[in-house]
Length: 529
Ligand code: SIN
Picture 1 (tube, rainbow, N blue to C red):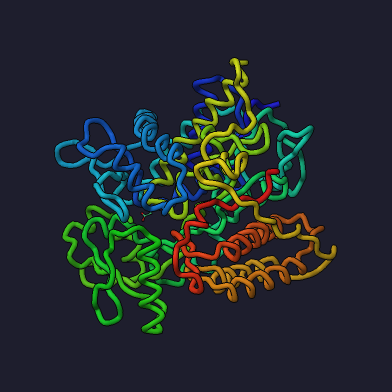
Picture 2: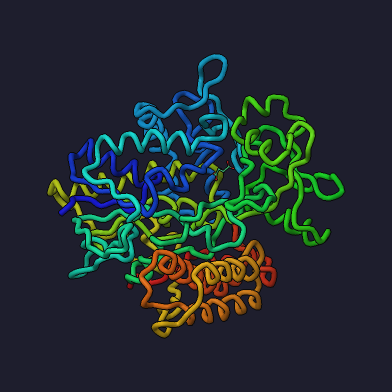
């Protein structure tokens, strides 16, 4: 039996795996449904927000910017942990071999992005930061982990005697087996594939959140999907991202009349909403990013330059067509500050988790940071349990985001229970193509639960998702069907949460409830009781 099984091979899962194996000498397995480097981390462009060394910037300012972007729903202790521990985790990554860009004086070069009051985003390869971090971590994981299992799909958690005891997997040949472990870390990423237009890779099907929901593990904040304002408007999927760092560098947004209409360095929810208003009033499906004034574009952003030139666009002379695209799942499996979930033995970190750092809207370039801070924190906590430290526990503690579950009325941010839609229980043998059902889910979510929502659009979406659940063949063990089942499970929970939250906050915008309400300074929690 493994000491630790990590599900997912992005920044959070691999930083945790490397630490558990190299610092604590635990036996560690990593399981991923694709190949090791094929995670959302690899696609992350902008960078990592962190205040290093004796910078005039401060972690207090980083904290304040993160809280402002999260619009009242961040957990302050979780954000404090993020900004204080982040710089050390970045330094460890650098020691592990990750190369961040430097300026002419040899100092780390720092970018500014939306919602940040200072330039504090470290980046690599211009806007290929995730690629570089993933490269360094995959090498380290190969050197340290006991087992790296690729093309193995985790179907469900095994729960025995009230704790997580491992997982059930299907391998590349379609054979089912169990992997037993003393501790399981869910680091399986988000659910961007719920939407028709997304920057997320095809593998981002919400598998971790869905298996947690099926196991009755507490999940929170699933109504908050962040839409990135500047995805290239182009048929390819996932949508190529035009990094927010471009705006930090001086690029501006223009409407169809060529006019600027928003402060481009506001947080993403604000910019995406302003874009939707422009697009609806002009009846168009895209607007423009104007980067023609950026003299050093090809040097500072070589990968974006390459991507644009492949489709015949020259940022020096062309306005770049853009539209918002689903980008980040702010909610997920509820954790305390150590990454413990409501199920003993199960830990969660990274995009799959709801640690409380993002609240209603994630601040740009805090996602890689969250992964590298909270994955290793979970390892420290579970290592304490393995080493028999006094008082060490792998159950949830009444700290951080977990307060909202354990003490709904007394926590700084309370929790409100939300009844999950019933489990998918369609007739065995019901037929439909998984690709068709997946596309129908994406269209439904985009129309009914996208950047703008109303009670009516959410009701239509809920009914359509229920109809789709009824054509799911529950006896089919194919990977494509499992992904569809997971998308439906997460999508139905997200729609229920969005319908229940009768206000607009962060990246949840209700056209029929435009104001923010103090009654909704709570996070909605599904399961866990
Ligand atoms: C970007 O480069 O705009 C994306 C980075 C992020 O999602 O934080």
